[in-house]
Length: 447
Length: 181
Image (tube, rainbow over all chains, first blue to last red; front, side, top):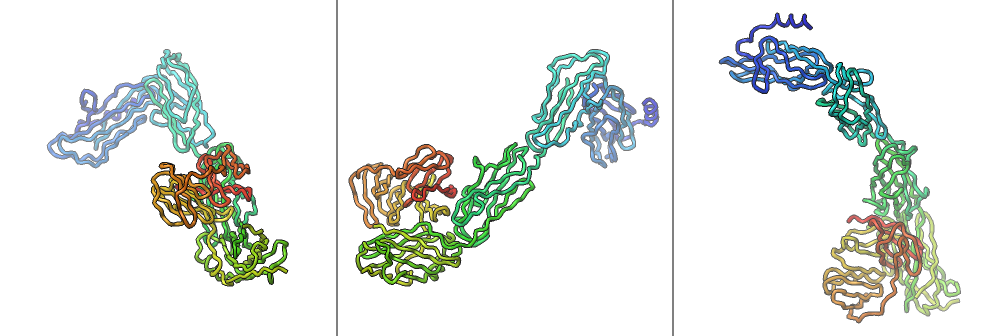
C-alpha cells in the first residue's frame, strides 16, 4: 500500500490548466491536487462520494475520461466522455465506498491525464458473514438461488464483532416477505471477537424474484432468491361414462399422475369435428373452454367447486376432442360419437274428433332420416287397415336438416284424418329409418 | 277385423305434418330476458334473448304467454296490459298483481276473469330436493327457485346460479347449458 502511494504521488502533477477536480462536500467543494483522504466509515457501510471536474478557463475543454478505479469502490453514475465542458461547466462522478472489512483502501481518480490518489479508511464494526466466513457486501445481494414453490432454503449467517471491545447491536431486522428469520431481540451486546449466528429462511409463496434487506445497526445487506412453480405430473383426461353416445350428458375429469406440489391453473378445451352442432358443448362457461385449478397435494383438478366438468354430446355424429393445457403439458382425449339409428326422446298420440295426431321428437345424428311408418292398432292390439302407413320423408328431412342450426334434433307432428270411431284406435307404432337402421316406438293413444 | 278406416291424407309430409326443432320450453333469465330452450333430453340449446324486461312467461304445447313491462303477448300477438309484474298460471290465468286484475288466456282468446280457484303448486323446493307432482327428486345443489319450463319439464335454479332441467316422466335431472348473462 505504501509503495503504491509513493508511486502515485510521484505521478501527481498540478491541476491542468482549464480543469479542476474537487470533492463535493456538504459545506462546499474541496479542491483536490494529488490525493485526498475520505472520511472514515464503518466496515460494511456504503458511503457515497461525489467527485467533480470543472472547466475553469475561458475556453471549452474536452473531457476524454473521468474514472475512479480501486477495490471497494463502485462507480454508480459514470459520465459518458468525451464531453465538451464550456467554461464553468462541470461533470460529476458518483462513487460508493463499500468496505467489507476494516482497513485502508485506495483508488485512483483520473480526469484526462490528471490523477488523484483517493484513500479511504474503514473502521472495525460488527459485520455479517456467511457460515463459511465470507463477509456480506453491501450492495451485493447474497444469493439464495432458485427454489421451487413449496420448498425452502435455509442459510446460516454470523454477526461477528472484529474489535476487541464489546459492540452494541441496536438494530437487527429482516424485511422481505419471502424471507424470515428468528433474530435475537435488540438491543444486545457482542463481546469483542464474539459472534452471533442466525438462520435466514427463504420460502417464497409466489413465483418470480424475491428480495429482502437485513438491517444491522446503520448498515443494510441484501438477500435475493427466485421461485419457480413446480412442474406438475402429466394430466390424464377421464371421461365418465367412457362410451358416451349422442344425446347424452357426461362428465370429464382431469387427474394427475401424482399430486401437485403447488396450486396451478389450467384450461380444458372441448372441440367437435363434425357438422356444426351447438348442443355439443361443455355445460359451463362458453361451452368451449373452462378454466380449472388444482391445489397443492391434490391430484384431481377443480372446475370451480366441482371435480369434473359436465358436457353434452349433442345430436350429431362426429368426434369430440378434449384438450388439457396445464403448464407445459398438452394432453388430449377423444370421444367418438358413432353414427346411430334415430333416437326418439318422446312420442305421443292424441285422439281428436275426426283425426289422430302423432308427435315425436328425437334426433338423428346422421341427418339421413328417410322412411316413416305408422301402424295403428285397435284397443285389442289388432292392426287397423292394411298395415303400416308408410311415408318417404327423406326430402322433408333433408330440407329440414339443410336449414337446421341445432344439429340432428327434430320434432315431427303428423295429423291423420280418421273415418270411423276414433275411440277404437288404441295405439300406434312409429318407425323411423335412417342410414344406420330403424327405430320403433309404440305409444298408447290419449285424449 | 276392425271397421275403422284410417286415412293418411298426404303421403307427402308437407301437407299433413311438419318437422321443426323441438322445444323444451322457455324461461326468464336473471337479467329479465326471455330464453327458449330447444332440444331433447340430454341435448339442450338455449337460445339468444328474445325479449327484454320480461316479467313472467308460460310455455306450453299450444300457448306462449309473455308478460312484458306493459303488454301481454300470446303466441306472438301483443295485447295491452297493466304495467308491472304478473303471475301466469299453468291453466292460462294471468294475474296482474299491481292492479289485482285477472284475465284468462287461451290460444284463441283473452278475456277478463275473476280470481280463479287456487292451484296446488306443481313444484316445490326442499333443500337439495325438488318435489314435482308428488315425486321427490334430488338436484345437484340447493335449489333457489323452480318453475315450469315447458310441458313435462321444470327448471330449478341452484345456489350459485347453475340451473338444471327436471323431467318427472324420465325421473332424471339434466344440467342446462350456462347462459351468457
